[in-house]
Image (tube, rainbow, N blue to C red; front, top):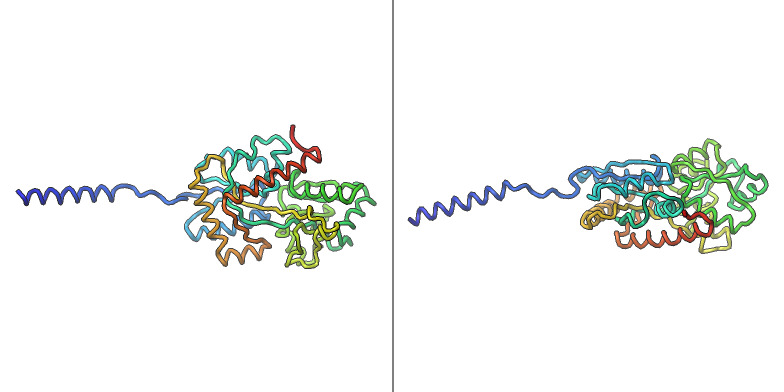
Length: 326
């Protein structure tokens, strides 16, 4: 009898073991490709940053699908993000100033409340460039040329409601009595190409896009929005030093991932940590630096504060210039 009971117990334990091993293991997130939607055309600074990170994560068995969707001041792309299934497999990678500008300036179908911050990736420096053979060496000289040649001197940015355009509105007020016509493209890469071809007078982009042209001797950077001069561009003056050291002309351009607002917090944290790991990698840092980008990691809660503050700041500028949507 004891032998029969012993055999029965062994059979039961064996059965439980078989059942345990047959139960499917929970897949680690992400277990399929993740879409990163970029509200700019391909070849720009955000596209470059995304592909550097994607290359690193590919080595970890994680695939990022980089989707560039320029045009509409970023609205079509960010609306896609807002409407995406909130399952942790779709994120947007906007420039925070433009992300905060467009929905406050015109109807887009989304607003700040439709997104969650995930992680800050980089904080770019905005830069204003002219062709080196233009003879223009400063922002004031550009403005003087615009006053002397009404309608013939312009500047271009990556969108109708770009942060560069809003920034230029602030600078024009300080100079007084002059406005530069604005030309909108769909990416910083397109803006730089247009300046190289002589189709525009000046290009207001980010140093990432303009640095190679400046180093090649094609462009002259006549103003940067950082507090101090950029290391790679020691001859490029800041806007503040050209306009009475006004601290209001120091303007950051943070970039990072946002998610549809109903995305579970565990997926937000998981993606945040993956990006943190990538940005801490020396090879990623070297590639970012070569592209003129910095690694400026902030976790989701701190990045949310950055976005909230930028939303308020941008909203104030829009109201002052009568650009707020009704």
